[in-house]
Amino acid sequence: MTPGKTARPARRRLSVDRRREELMAAALELFSKHDAEEVSIDDVASAAGASRALVYHYFGGKQELYVAALRSAAEQLEARLRPLEGGKPIDELAGGLRRYFDFVEEHAAGFAALLRGGPANRAGEVGEIVDGVRQRLFRLIMKQMRVEEPSPVLRTTLRSWIASVETAGLDWLEHRDIERATLEKMLVDQMVALLGVAAQYDNGVGELLGQLA
Image (cartoon, rainbow, N blue to C red):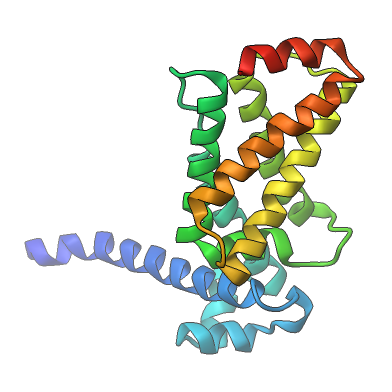
């Protein structure tokens, strides 16, 4: 009838998106501190200031909410990991690490929930989400190093380093007793050191190390 009436559906859609985001943010906060099995729909509803019926309405159940919240965190992190080219490989690596820790700092609950939540041997959708982030980081590093197909030694080395970066991120969130810039530099130096060890077992890694430096 009036211009205001026609605009209402758009406002309602925006409100739905906002409410979903609030519910997922509340869920991530809880999942970052407790195992998923310990968090109930009532806990999420209470933390978000919503009814449990609303949570069920948007997500269908706790597992669906858990997956949606982790996927949201993973998508935000992966967006940060899009490669920026134009510098030396080691500088690009440092830049990627800086963007990674930007996410860690700005979305602490999402990062912690993504890497911490759920049983140790995660499977199904949750495992795929977490593994997808690791694969994205792995591909980013490969691109920055100008490597198309890694040798077994290089692949193992890079995956070990990614595990160190994840652990360092969680430890930094818990303690924050080291400057972020210092931690990032330490991790870059750690990568160089790991490649130095790997070069003893693979001549190709030695050549790569020379190009990086």
